[in-house]
Image (cartoon, rainbow, N blue to C red; front, side, top):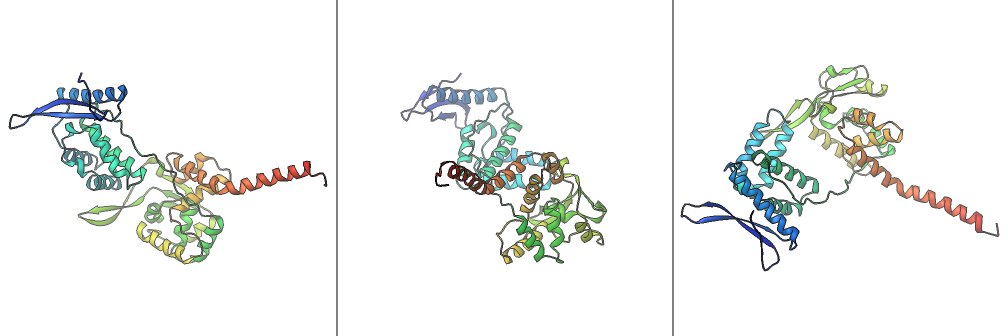
Amino acid sequence: MPTARKLPSGSWRVRVYSHTDASGKKVYKSFTCTDPSKKGKRKCEDEATAWAREKESNLATGKTFGASAAEYIDIRRNTLSPRTIEDYERTKRLYLPDLDGIRIDDITQQDIQRVIDKHSEKLSPKTVANIHCFISAVMRQERPQMAFTTSLPQRTKPNLYIPSDDEVKTLLDAVRGATLELPIMLAAFGPMREGEICALRSDNIDGDTVHVCENMIKKIVDGHTTWIIRHPKSTDGDRYITYPEFVRKLWENRSGRIVDMNPNTLCKAFKRVTDSLDIPHFRFHDLRHYSASIQHALGIPDAYIMQRGGWSSDRVLKAVYRHAMDDQTKEMNEKANAHFSELYDTKYDTKK
């Protein structure tokens, strides 16, 4: 097992023989740990040992990270959605050029940590976590025994906005009879996503029930953006939603695609309307949060809300409920304090 030596700075370092270059010079792989304790020494030695073990057992392939990442993406083109493939390609192109030319067997935990630290300064914790997820997936493809100890930025509380009943009513009054009226109702009373609304066809509607089974997504082909319709990414997205009678009347005489827009034009049109009204600006997607919040307030079980909205987990619902609780905290505090004040005055005010 390689033995770490302490540097004057207090850090631990291990050097492991890698190979001999064309000039006959021996090349060593260096591993360091800034933790000056014995724990840091063990960590440094463990990383060096793991790398040496993989090298000796020929698990290393000699391919660069860039080549391995491209191969990882290509293998999954027929099984993952075009949006996911596009996200992978964007991550590789924009955030991982520092790793692109490095051989897979030469990449250490420190190399990965440096990339994560670099992007943590400007990107959101969620984006950084997605970058690390892609890196680890590519690395495990070539080095399945590699253990990751990357420190990721702490996730922040999502900044959600949930429109009120009055704001939704103001919005609907402004678009009554207009193109946006039906899309807004499908999102607020469904809830359906932008892509699901734009992909909806009359063939998938039976009376007052919508079969959500298609989604319109963006795809980049030769540098140009196009929109395609695919099945939902997960089985939870394939669902049936029964709408109120007043919503059914808006689509009953339509055939083909119910909404002749793509998600981009839909969201831009929605923004123009909200900007013209005396209400806070919020996204079209926030209408889904409104729908979930109202159903929760009505006492509808979470399992039903998740099924109706096509959520595969309750993570989003918890974030929505937490936000709603934050909005009500001041009101609840005032109500509690008023009760306690009344109790105090009644008990201790001798004049009364």
